[in-house]
Length: 263
Ligand SMILES: [Fe+2]
Ligand SMILES: [Fe+2]
Image (tube, rainbow, N blue to C red):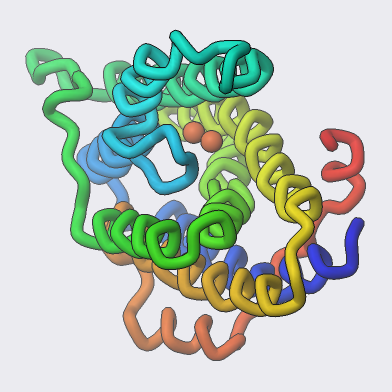
């Protein structure tokens, strides 16, 4: 892998580990219940359906925003818009919608009898999710292509929600269903993250751009930890989060072998 990317990975690895710690702490805490599971699942469904900040097509949400853009730009296909770009967008749309379905299915399986099914229109963001989205839009507005590269790099946060969720396999009950949904999403999101990484090396960035990307990536990954912490009902205390920001954590070991296979 490109040494610049390796450096970015090294910078990101402790913060990815922080996001993993949020989720792991939630699952190992005795406080989690079917009720709290329903809350984080609905919030994850929000992210998969309405979430944004990673693509020039997705303002207005990963689903509707992308569909609107596809309709708007359809007349330009193979005139000013390459068909392969459209195909990539469609594949991304299908993947994200299947993630929405996977988590909505788990929600519907565990909700108590007589409570309403989930649908996209009842889903809501939470303050830390809004703060992450606002930061990503700000980085795109202020830094254009470089801001976008940073957003792509941080997409999915090394899939730690999904890898930690997969680790619940074998526990039975709700945990088993969560593990299966996470396993499906994990494979897709690992690919999205790698696409974001390869995109950076292809972009022909200058030294100053690499420095800037590093700053933007750190800011976004820190916001991601708060986003996950809010999503799961604050399993980590703010003091612990600040310690993680200072590097008081064992970084995740980036799986270069898997990255090579998937690339
Ligand atoms: Fe997704
Ligand atoms: Fe994705």
